[in-house]
Amino acid sequence: MLNLWNLLFLSFVHFSSFSVTLGGESGNPFTPKASFIRYWNKELHREIPNTHFLLSKVSPLTAVDSASFSKLAAHNNLASRLPSFCSSAKLFCFPDLSPSLEKHSKDVNFAAYLDRNFTNYGSDRLAGLDSFKNYSENDNVVVDSFLRYSRDSAGHKDQFSNYASASNVVDQSFNTYGGAATGGSGNFNNYNHEVNVPNLRFTSYSDDSNGHGQTFTHYTEETNAGQQSFSNYGKNGNGVPNDFTSYGRDSNVMESDFSGYGKTANGAKDTFTSYAFDSNNPVNGFKSYGDGGNAAVDSFSSYRDQSNVGDSSFQSYAKSSNGAKVDFDNYGQSFNEGTEKFTGYGQGADGQSIGFKIYGRNTTFKDYTKKGVTFSRYSNESSTTLGKVVVSKWVEPGKFFREKMLKRGMVIPMPDIKDKMPARSFLPRTILSKIPFSSSEIDQLKRIFHAGDNSTLGTIMLDALKECERPPSPGETKRCVGSAEDMVDFATSVLGRNVEVRTTQNVNGSKKNIMIGSVGKINGGKVTKSVSCHQSLYPYLLYYCHSVPKVRVYEADILDPNSMEKINHGVAICHLNTSSWSSGHGAFLALGSGPGRIEVCHWIFENDMTWTIADS
Image (cartoon, rainbow, N blue to C red; front, side, top):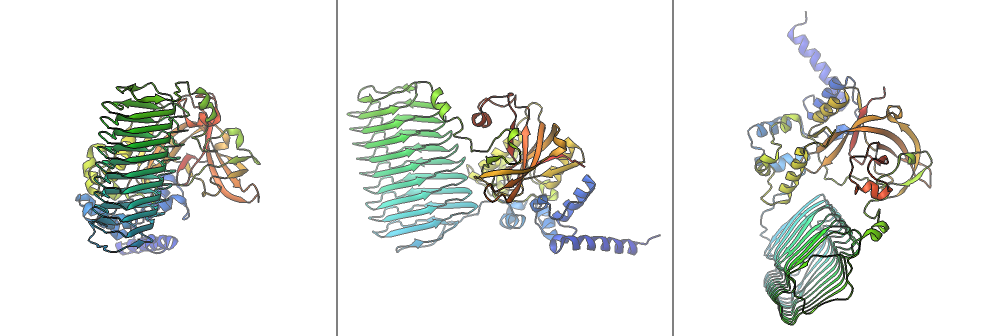
């Protein structure tokens, strides 16, 4: 009979050999990664390779840190160590910014700048120029705040170039910008270009200023799913010229709100050129625009032109103004009709001149003065013809394709399959089980992750929670998982223990034409079911996993069509039953046809995955 010492020795030998296979701290048998490897081997009855892509998503916490943070979570005290927790566990957290005490009494040129909070920057400055270049560029999470910027300055110039471009999640606030400034100018060039989730706030912008002009060039172009707000913009200003050029072009589902714009201003001159042009489902709100202004000249050129659906609202526009001249040129020539609403337009105005040229489809003019309003060309025709022209405009080439295109030698476009989510890791179950996960506990979650009221992070978390709590669609089984063990549990609950998980190998070929090489049929090409897992934006790595019935899953070598060399190994899933899909689904826009009439295939994007019954 083995005594206790023999048992301990054998355990030590087992853990030591286990540690050698992993190497270093990750080989410690008490780390989250080691724990998951044992869990995988036990639940799936086979060993997981050390190079398996799923292991890279398991928490990188050391054994000591895992135990320490688990104890803090148990006592509801993670918030006290949040920066350390986020860094050690590789989470997506917003930095805690405290007011800056920096003083900048002379001209400053910031060439590379990241995550700072400016208070009273450039206030009371006399002349001079401050320049920001490559500001928070190409970063993952950008959180910046400017408070009382250039306030009460005279002849002072501000310049921002390449501001937060190509960043992922951007949260920026400008408060009391250029307030009561005299002369000088401000310029934003290439602002938030190609940002994934922007949340931008300008409050009290150029209010009470005198001849202090502002220019925005290439503002939030090619952005995705964000919000922008301008409040009290140019209010009570005198002779203030403001110019927006190429605003929100090529953006996707952007929400912009202008409130109190040019209100009670004197001699204002505002120009919007190429506003929300070529965008998809934009939501634009103008409230109290130019109301009570004197001798204002406002111009909108190419407003929402070539956009797709969306919702635009103008309320109380140039109301009670004096001698205003407002011109809309090429307004709302959308491909597919959205929602337009004009109320209180030019009411109570004296001596105004309001003109529309090439005005798009709209029947929602209410409560507007008919005196002084001219329409050069007003269109209220059906969008059917235009809709056909742009049938696949808002669906990236190659995003959806037919099953017959997965044949060796076929050359097809590959969409951008790059993962645009912030880099994050799963949490260990020992910590995850102690953190709330419901919309009813959002206040507690905001406290843990230092998310203020009405904050971007708070909104991100609440949106993810609501999607996870949404009832499943008919025939769907779904679960949101924040640990690798939970994902294994869900996949095996649907498919059984004999399962495999696959993802596309890399992002090579994205946004280019590719050639299909050898093609493999999972489960022999039979109609099967799978569990697909897609990332959700959340502080820790969170996947929305759901069962997908009646599919065929394929693997395919992806070749460079010029050199014929293999550059990637893709995984594609073909949905055979599309009868419950919306008729406006992007797949039907791109491929034609409609729900239930065709199968629809797509690639598994980077870091997404699909589980199937194993072939062996």
